[in-house]
Length: 425
Image 1 (cartoon, rainbow, N blue to C red):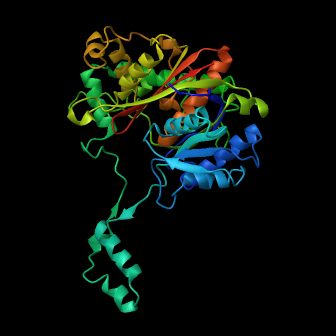
Image 2 (tube, rainbow, N blue to C red):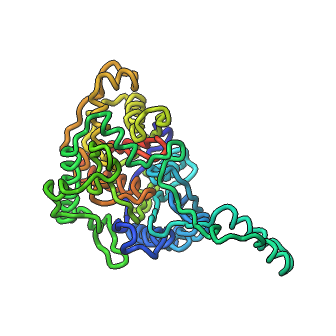
Image 3 (cartoon, one colour):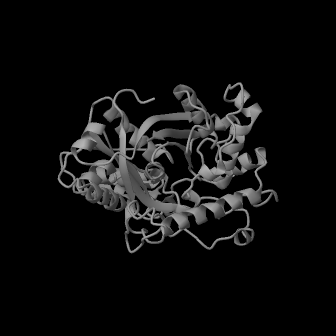
């Protein structure tokens, strides 16, 4: 539970999320972050103002992007006196960046700040192997032409083979999708139920766009006004034609390209503040951050890689004296449809809740109508470090529309971790 002053969520902004190698293929994290922060500055009239901190994150980034938070802040329209920091916790990155800002506000270190994140799987860092890197460093350090040439003695063409960023868990060698296939089999999650969840996500996101829900949350960029992954006309019949994407040999694979989140480019950010700062600057408080919590699982020795949110939520609920049913909105990141369904089934399982969560009874069932009411990652996409800020801004606006209530935010991450939060209005 956040200790100290209440922390207000004033709102958020994001650019449309786009499938990799499409609209943002040549933009990169800095360009997407600058557009997003600049739009947030415009939305809240922050031009020239000094905030306490800007915390941004990125999972896939170049070494030259050494401090995206500071560099993006310098180009955003904020005062140059606003500090910036960059951090990373895989898919939970921007929820963590918001937690950093929230903690600083709660403890009185700052009065206001921005948290968010950006990610690209189009502009990925591609590096040479260790041997060629060593040669290049030695040549750069050499003082003479002869010394520079000597660094390449014995050079072989195979040294030109590049190293691409890995998508597998370093400790298991398996991709997130392969891990999630294991979870789907363990929890008996059917292909049909996954496809149904995916179709519902697309339809709910499309409906939210049509009624104008995202008009003040999404700003156009590069000629794109809506997430280009969104397929309003998708159907169970179309999804049923797709082949398994990860388990292609056992005949029991259920995860496909449609019920899994595609690789995505995008950025999102939220403005947080103390109640006093919000009032002094004339900004409405959409909700408050009550708590943020992180947990992990031992996926190397058999636990499901993406099951950590089940633990994080249980621990956070216990700390706050709440039941799983004490929420009006549940924003559960849809890394894979199977991951969401495994999580829900685990919370309903008496055996799992007793053995793993050390509870006397199951956490229980959630009203499905309250889960991701305006769609989520399967339809919008998932730029790793941007998803948390997207979800917080979305949940905060839903609480405003409802006139009050409580939202549960749950995000699974690579490395077997889960980042969760409670928002209240």
